Amino acid sequence: MKSCSNCGAEIDEKAVICPKCGVPTGTQYPASQSPKDPGLAAVLSLLLSGLGQVYNGELKKGIGILVGVVVGWVTFLIPGIIICVYGVYDAYTTSKKMNSAEIAFKKANFSDYILFILVFLILIGLFAAILLWMELL
Picture 1 (cartoon, one colour):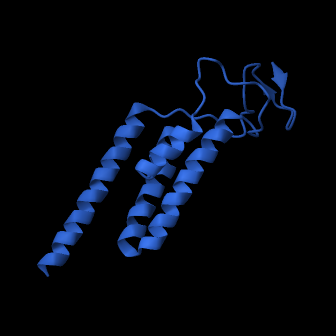
Picture 2 (cartoon, rainbow, N blue to C red):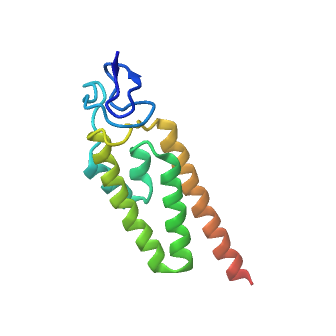
């Protein structure tokens, strides 16, 4: 066991981040844990807003960005574009921070991707239903 240089808590020798205060310990990630690809995270978020966040293991943030983009596009075009650009930037910088141990490394589960796609399909269905309802009035 070693102690954290920031808070003094005892931490595991292999710990990358102190579990108590979140400060990086200087230990690199194990070889079994492949680093995040910032470019891939940005491209995924560009293809489908929020997908880069899911790749980074941040499902809630990804769904929030997806909903924000859809609502922004439905109400006004500019807010949707701004949120979309922010999502690409956030996915890129978050994966870089995870690789450098500035923030905790999170791994996305396959179920996170499935849940994200389901939310996307539900949003598209709601949007289509609203458009149909408005046409019928």
